[in-house]
Amino acid sequence: MSASIDITVNGEARSLPAPLPLSEFLAGAGLDTRKVAVERNEEIVPRSAYATTLLGAGDALEIVHFIGGG
Image (cartoon, rainbow, N blue to C red; front, side, top):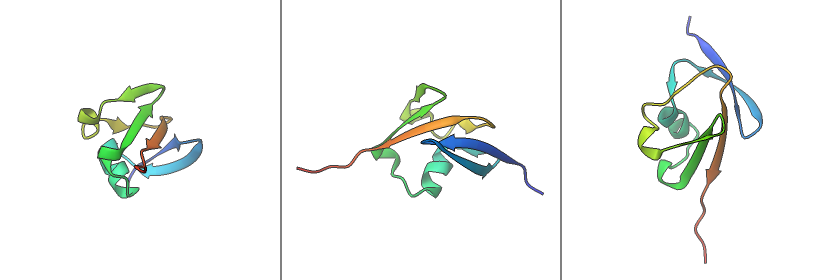
């Protein structure tokens, strides 16, 4: 039986397998890590830390996806 954690993503509750690196969460959500900014518990997560940042129970993520245009 695998452990799970409950987090909030952009105001929505989610249940995820644990442990889960931020980079894997983003990939599973279909998000290009080059085109998003992530705030975890009110602190910006540097893109270079996505792979080493493990999501934990109660974490609150805010994800902004950049879209080009002109």
